[in-house]
Picture 1 (cartoon, rainbow, N blue to C red):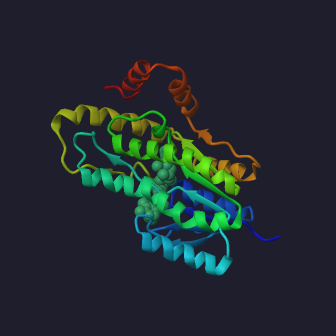
Picture 2: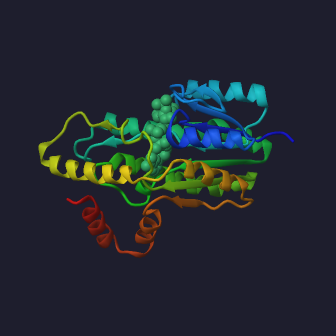
Picture 3: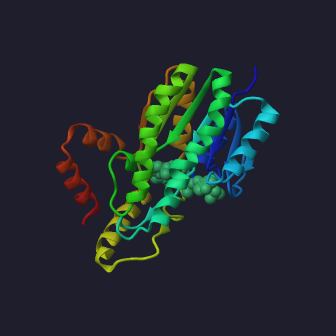
Length: 265
Ligand SMILES: NC(=O)c1ccc[n+]([C@@H]2O[C@H](COP(=O)([O-])OP(=O)(O)OC[C@H]3O[C@@H](n4cnc5c(N)ncnc54)[C@H](OP(=O)(O)O)[C@@H]3O)[C@@H](O)[C@H]2O)c1
């Protein structure tokens, strides 16, 4: 039987690394991509890819297509966190988050969708976040990038279903990966935000210390790929159900209160 071809971004660490290895071990032919090489041993094929560059995306897709002739699954996973209040964030900094977390996924879809449309089949999974359900203080543009990905994916799912292409979102809560350690900070800090910054940092640190095992994300991906009719949204991790229930059933004022309480500011 021919193997399904899976392309995943952000495979040098965290969710992407675990998912690429896990799917490869299950028999998928996996192309895991990132700007740097994974540090640990891998069972998938690694390709260098910067999702902020159209040239890099096109070169990567062409090389996979020339070898395999198809792409069955695209997992848009690469992303990073920018820490800083909305007021402290310069436009260039805000754009850099959107370039990776949102337009990076868009670039990948633009390159892969025509191939899947021609094949009349495909799966696209976009990794969002609980921060794409309820916005987090001090991570305004990270949240905005995930909210953008949510709206985009809803439309993409509607439009692509006519070509037998199924689109899903995964909304993880906090998991133990490198994302907290590798986060970028805004350049220009305003001292009036210092106490909020400290409180949010401490709450997130507590979250990361007790965060989920990223191998759970890999298993969830495998389960989604097994489903004949995958759902639009999958929530996973500590508090992810609570976050979605708050969003669905509670007034905005209660949610603002809950976020301030959780982040202690
Ligand atoms: N961990 C969590 O608690 C959590 C919760 C909710 C959602 N998420 C989401 O899950 C996804 C994966 O995060 P993670 O936690 O696994 O973080 P991670 O361990 O820091 O991994 C991030 C990956 O993204 C890649 N990446 C970053 N910028 C890139 C670019 N311009 N081009 C290509 N690859 C790029 C990195 O590789 P290189 O630096 O080598 O390029 C790395 O492989 C992200 O979208 C994140 O927002 C994470």
